[in-house]
Length: 264
Ligand SMILES: C[S@@+](CC[C@H](N)C(=O)[O-])C[C@H]1O[C@@H](n2cnc3c(N)ncnc32)[C@H](O)[C@@H]1O
Image (cartoon, rainbow, N blue to C red):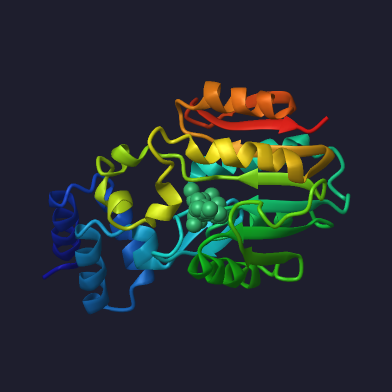
């Protein structure tokens, strides 16, 4: 078989499994695989709708290279909007800021912020110990382990009042009933704990937003990722919690993506 015939066969296998970006996925697989047997194996896994990030074992996020497994949400490009929103509001990047990321997963948001704020340090909290193991590896992989700490916790429960300069979160915000309608890569392979936002998807924000207000220092900044249809209720929660300058940032696709605010 010629190279071109083999490639056409793999692309066909991916396309018939419903994968639209078959050629792009195959290119990634060809770059990662050592031999033809491994290519066959990776293509079969992808045709079973396993996420490409799980097959390759990593995912770029911001300027970082992150390890990804089935224990963490695969970081999304849309979440870079949260990183940008925060960085735009940090006027002095050389301040010794203390940041916490609640529901840190792979560590994506915290590590991206630390990579841009050389004098900042931070804490990543997650309820999943297996996610935190990946986050710790990602800190080492990106040489940020001296400034990043990770520990288990239920949102901000163990964090003292008035102790943070920046508090961020990309919480689970998909309505429970919607999860089963999502593509197999998400529905069958991403951790439920990372997705499920309860009956209307907003459950976590009701707990988290007042908690973020409590743990921030006066003048501290909060930013949370939201679903495309959650801007109005999450904005209302932020205002009710007492935040000033509550603002919405859209992602590159023009969808509402981040609500931010400052503690007076
Ligand atoms: C949508 S994922 C975000 C992961 C990562 N921050 C990102 O943006 O790619 C939500 C994360 O919240 C964590 N989580 C769920 N319930 C939690 C809780 N009660 N306390 C802390 N973290 C929780 C999940 O384990 C998951 O890692």
